[in-house]
Every structure is written in C-alpha cells, then in structure tokens.
Length: 440
Ligand code: PMP
Image (cartoon, rainbow, N blue to C red):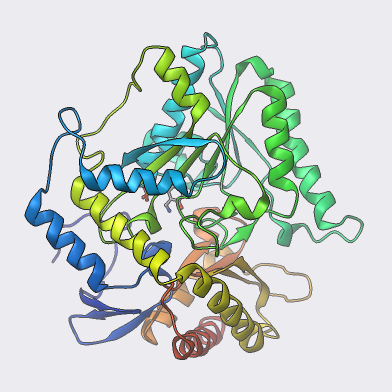
C-alpha cells in the first residue's frame, strides 16, 4: 500500500531500485532497457561515475546557499558554458528546478520585458493546439492540451491557440512540405492580426514536438517564417526545448538545425540528465537590458534557483557530453536506430510513420496503414504498447490518444546518448514484439 499520490492513480508499479548505463532494475531483479530516458531525461544513462563523483564532491563541499546572499561556482560555470554554446543573441541564464518552472519564468520574463518597455498591454500568448508546456497554472494556460486543461478551467492567463505543424498529418498531394509549413505559419500571422500586434506578448512552441505527438520536427522553413513574423510584429519567440533540447536531436539545441534563434528558450530534462532536478531559461541581451535599465531586477524567484548540487550535476553531465563527443554519437546512433526501426517496423501494417531527429524518434501507430486512420482511442493502444514493452524489459514513452495529443497513438523512443549497437538491436526487436502483441 503506497501513500504516494502519483499524477495518475497507478495500479501496482514495479519498484525501481538501481540503474546502470542504459538499464534500470526493479526490486524483483528484472532489467529494463531505458529506451525513453524516462521522458527524454536520462541522456547519460544511469549511474555515470563522473556525474556521481561531481555530485558527491559538491554535496560534501556546499549543498545549499541562498541566491539572495551568494552565487556559487557550479552555477557560474554552468551559466558560462550554457551562454558560450547558446544560439545567437542569448546572453544570460536563469536557473530553475524543472521544465514547468522554466516555462513559467519565461512567460513572466516576457511580461516584465514589455512592462519595462512601457507596453504593458502586450499580454497575449499565442501557442499551438495540443501543445504541452508544463503543468503549473501559467504553463498549463499556455499549453493547448485540452485534456490536461479541462479540469482547471478557467485558467489564469488565456492563451490563443493556432494549428500546429505536424507534417505527417497533412499528407496532401497538392502541397509540398515546405508549402505546408508556410501555410501553417501563416496561422500565426493571422492570429496576431486578429488580436492586434500591440496586444501580443509572445509565441511559444517546441521546435520538435515531444510528449504530445512523439518526436515531430517542424517542417523545413516553418520556424524561420515564424521568426520573421514575430520580428515583424515585435512579438517575442519562446522556444520550449525542455524535451527536445540539450543534445537530444544531435545538436545541443534543436532550433539551430532550423537556423533560428529565440528570444527566450526553456531547457530542463537533459540539462541535468535526471541526476538532479534542474531547468533554465536562456534569455537574450535585449531582454536582459530591459530589466537592467528598467527596474533592475527580474521580479521572480524560487528557493532552489541555482542550487549548487543541481548545477554541479548538470555541469558534469554537460562536460561528459562535450569530452566524450556524445552529440556525434546521438547523430550516428540515431541514424542506426532509425534504420533498424524502419527495417523491423517500416512495413508493419500498423506503423503509419517513423520520424524524429537524432535519438528522439517517434512511431505513429495506425489501424490502417494506407489511410493512416488511427485506432479507436478507447483501446489506449499507446498505453498497451508501453505495458507490452515493459513486460519485455523495454521502456518507451507512450504519447497521444488519451492525452489529446495528435490524434491516434504514438511511441517515443529516446535512449541515452551512450547507447551502443547491441542495445539498438534489442530496442528494435523488443519494440517490434511489443507492438505486435499490443495490436494483436
Ligand atoms: N515543456 C515541455 C516541452 C515538456 O515536454 C515538459 C515535460 N514533459 C515540460 C515543459 C514540463 O517540464 P517538467 O515536467 O519538468 O515540469
């Protein structure tokens, strides 16, 4: 009998007791290949000695110092590293403890930016239908996930939602992918016009959609057009890279592959790789300057911002990725995993799409391969696949269906960056069997 209230009221869950490399172990001695890194969190796998060493050392030396009184070495070094490797224009970092807090802080930064600039009427947020940006009330208000929002209406800040960019769903013969991207981006222009640019604060989107749709990259040209539209109307662009960022797609930030730099970027999950709860907002010089020349302070704060042990863990994770050239591994192993999945599951009668970037791949499960018609959501196929995979010792992340993501069922595959060839074979085999069993 557990007294822990999880997000879902779980039945019986296995008790995780240990993790080593790409595997997790439960109390009954069963091993699971962690092919989702939790929810694209565990980028270095489990028990990495360099990270454990850094954690111990920092906890020994200094576990906590309030940022109202002190800064700390790991926080300063991590901020330096993040800014040095950030997209163009980013000049500062604000540390928080996770993804929702990062989105929350980014939205408040955007709001304060316009207040400092004497445009307090710019308050409207534009986001996309089905999007997920976190579960705190502000982040939830920004997100467009109807199922998650339903029980909390009315939300604190009303957001306007536009059509997302899911190339796999569009499949129109009379339009190229690029044309599709530009058409969907036009939805942002139309929405800004409708609301009046002088009332619009920010547009927020994930460059590669993760949890709600299973690793869907924006089509080429879409984000560039979005950037142009934001610039033309003085609207801030917030890119949420909480899930797709920090190397997951083969470059440190996903948006650089689209040739786009945001005004604000949120990062979390892979930043600390699961070794500590940590997230951050990366902000542009212009936003920093508005605070500096205005009230002189970002009006925000949490007890654990810049936590020394969390920053030391994240610093160690990021140094290992750099030292061991792991982004290269993400690219090569990502390509191999994609080919293996294509080989094993490409012709599968119930696999409608395989997509993603780097080690951030998604499969769409359909009832009919030809029409791409989804299964009845009541079947909860994605949940059944997760269960069947777990029974085979494989962890994959289920998406869609019951969480009102894109229609239908999706499976996200996001193994650690240290994954090796033999792991990839086992992942593809076990996932294939799990899908067969779940749809049987
Ligand atoms: N944004 C995105 C894109 C996410 O995927 C998530 C988590 N799934 C969040 C924000 C919220 O992060 P957290 O769960 O750490 O609060």
